[in-house]
Length: 516
View 1: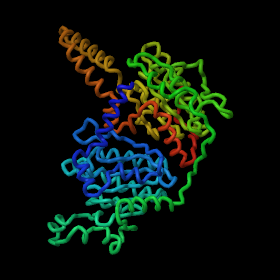
View 2: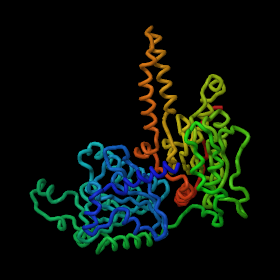
View 3: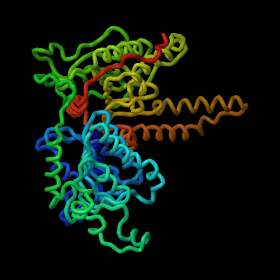
View 4: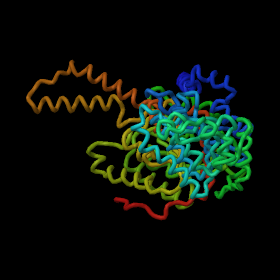
């Protein structure tokens, strides 16, 4: 696991260094990088939870997709922060930037977070405009809907914000522009010249002073980038922002077991089982005067391949579902459905810890109703209204990914460990199925099956599925909110639960029809 984490840090560094030689050129102009702007914006000594740093990994675009986004505390207020990285193609937005920004907007909406855009972008990446133009309008829609929900939006313009990008400040509640740097216009001087014949310069057409003195599109004129960040912090300080949720218990204890041990928990071979209770006791709050037991397991003797129970994390109550053995059977599915209903009855968030190969197959289990029982669990997950958090620790295959609240089931946040793997089924199983199908097809046609020739195909398929199931691939496709060091799990989930607490938690009043 240490080797996997070292590799993770190397991949994350690619996002930090994506601008290459242009980073120094940017600094030589007296400008701050996207991450430097964020560091100055958030409260001193507070954490910044960066989200989706590997977006675009494995694509033709830079790792990070020319955006830095995450959750930070500004003047005591948790905010969703989105910063263009102007050192990567001038901050131009590509298809992965869009996916990343849409997910960020979704996180802000569901967790009722103010949004701060640190804006400096040349607009759309023109060679891929056909993939950006039509869906890109959603970004402007999200800004205006956020304002309608009374979720403040702030845009700090540090440089170019042209064409469609001009609507980011244009649709934000508060706009700050940096003097002699911000350039906000629907069309730059060359395009205006072509379209109308008019000759103009950047400042007259869309400079910060013009927008502050004449058009009124800017609310505050900053003398430099530091002043702009100061003004942004003052704007947040005046939002009169209060959490509406239930405050957590203050006097909680640190975990009973050392989180450092998490590195030893996941076997190299995911076929080997491990006890998820060992992970749970290194993530949740420990025993204390008011918390006599760190983890109260529910139905421990029934459906033992799924461990469920109650705990608290950074003072927040939470229900946990964790795969104790890879396979889910009817007992586990029914146990999960009941537990999820109970969590909704008492308005308690749920944490799903994945290490599953899916639901059990075979004549005995089909006759025992595995389909309807699996459907019962998925029904409960689908219609549950309490916030869900998901961490993929190991395997997450087949419908087990769905039943354990995978990405398609809208968890508030989803993170993976470097040991995670996710696909329709394991590589060896998938390749084996293809071999059986090919063998049966040959028999039906009365043709001999070339077993030796199929070996190469089988090996190729296994390698392909293995590669596609790795966490960097999935994170690059924005199927998670980040690959994290297992030792950071408690801190990451603590930040997420604090963010969730912006609003009251209300469980579902009813579910779909449970097929008994």
